[in-house]
Image 1 (cartoon, rainbow, N blue to C red):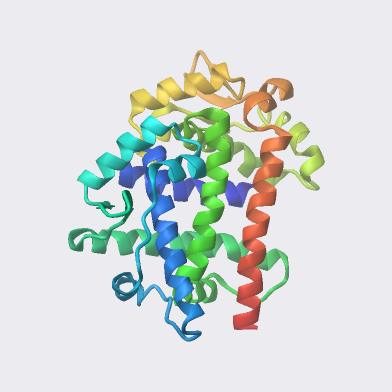
Image 2: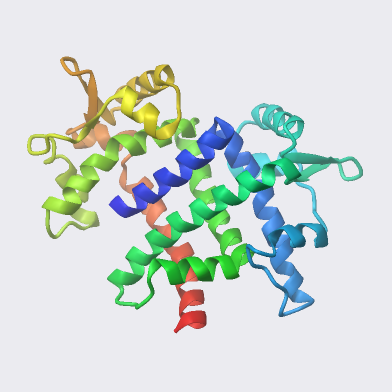
Length: 307
């Protein structure tokens, strides 16, 4: 969990800083995933079709960009229809989406002046994902380091990225239905990570069944398992005032407690309160199942291509 939450934090911080909203980024991910699907479908015609990151710009000019409609984005994300409509308009105005007048939908765009930033972000996300996957393969005694994994992802970029975005969208949809605000999810990750890091370093024999109990033992022993609004804002890019408001919402949801003297927030030690809305068994189970399916796809492909 510690490695996974760190990886997800990097991913969510990255997309928040680009688009100033997890909701906006989630909507754009739907269109991006569609592009990658159209690229890998070119292999139905040509098994040797190059789906690498290096060839991505060229592939954009080759594929038939199928439009997505507002109703399909609502179904994929669980974001309210009027919010989707408003954010799609904003994304189109900013040049991230292009309207398909014939089919009354939109498709993803990569304007010339945004290409450099796009590839910088993709390279960062690829490195982040490679480090996370390398930790898993190390635990499984598979001899693949993060550089080998990164090179493999870049060489088969659209294949890996289609599955990656599919997994992320499924996970974000789950939390959207639970919290109605996935910026809140990003802040919750910052609050729980110090606790998980402490557990990972100091407690042995931690498994799914005793994890919830062990989290409740941390506070009295851990002197650095709390966060403040300023540090959360610095990491995530979310304005400090917004962080304060959303940290207080997490207190109201029972996930966090606020220390009056220090004004810092830490994971609630009451299991019933902590697991009621966020760190529940259902939520953790869903995360495990969703990302395990994705990781299985990655590992099967890596083993096939590299071992």
